Length: 463
Length: 176
Image 1 (cartoon, chains in turn green, blue):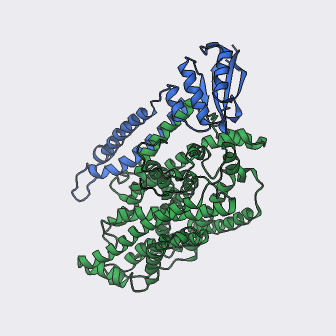
Image 2 (cartoon, rainbow over the protein chains, first blue to last red):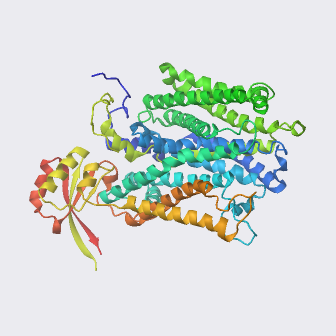
């Protein structure tokens, strides 16, 4: 029968179960490395700038931002959509790859979920501050109140968005946490430090690994996995609906929901790639996150990048084909050419063309190149959101109200602050939480052979 | 009243020997109190014959959420404070669907997690009742209650040892 080496080994080196625990827990047991303090210092400095910008915004209002009555959505919405997109990888990794029975996901899903939780936190800050008076944000909760006919508008995509993001944050955080409970128990039972025993013991919820616990745990994973899969699609299609339902040239398209969902998975996977490269290099997790894992993520990126390219070209084609002069103007005069052409071409090159390098096995196996490309994809995805938000708003139907948009230092500081918050969160994750799902890796360690028998019918394959 | 319970603990080094011994013990009519493993093992979960209804519970949580959400939105938009939006109907049902889906998923997640916590007796700060501390690391443990294991001690010890147990020892714990 025809056989190929589908994937390499899931774990490099013949490791005993106890070695798996030890090696994954090594960063928690080891002394904090010097670079960690430096990186944390930089992150906190960035965060401090963000806090200062928030202070300015809160005390002086959003007039300190670069928005005007034409471009009412600037960096805040761009960054919001960007962070939410990055936050998509967690669910995509845990749920989609779980459903598709991709065993290689076990080495990466913990990091992807951690990233999701921090990224969604960063994202939530932007619309909150954009409300202008964020201390009244609870007005968006639907509860009977005395403010007159102020039930929230259940027909508004902005309200849907609020629901979707809150649900997404709570669900991904709990999914992530419950995945960690058995690993916290492993730390509790293997550590020599009394403080760690007490702290991780508290968070381990008294887990002992009995068959009763595992049975319900599996049931829980099944339920959450099944229903959370919907979220991967729903969250970003709702975000895209914020745009698509408004009658703006360049926004008012049916392409938006799938285009946004795919874009979100694209940027999320790129950020995961950035993180796992760091984990491999900084924490010697190379035996668990092997070349084959990186390879698999790169292959997904090539595929998704092609969809992105198709979406970009479809948008342009439809603008021309529709015959609408406003659409034509937006795409041909205000995106491909014009004052925002750099952002358009940045988007196109970094998202649709650059990832095509991943067709080459040599590129996929070169960690540095992979790392750099993953950063460029994230930059490209940021440009994509800029391209959508700013170009459509700056010049729409009425030339009298055309305006340009430039961010102010307050907005830049706000964004840099969330970058600092994200990297600080990721650094804390690296230091205090098992970076790889120990129990899950142990479970797949029995399948640790080159998978060449994928065509053999009925081979033992449960999760 | 505190009584001392006597247990017999069989320790195995890997999944294969554990499952082997577990299945042979069941075939000989041994009553197994509990099995502790570092990761879930299909054969053990089915062999222990414990059932969980957590998935059924989740379905009913979902049903409850859907009814409450659609009912709640209908109440707000039609009964409590109807508003005219350019002649559109008060009951704008199809656009309630998005919120219903998202909030149903949230409700199912939170309630199922709560159920999991209650039924598995897992909660923050609980003191773990550890039988063998290595069970969360690299050992697979079969626990037998000496008073009702349905077989005598030397026989079961031999059964475990011939099937690859690395240790068999006795353990006493104080229980209420």
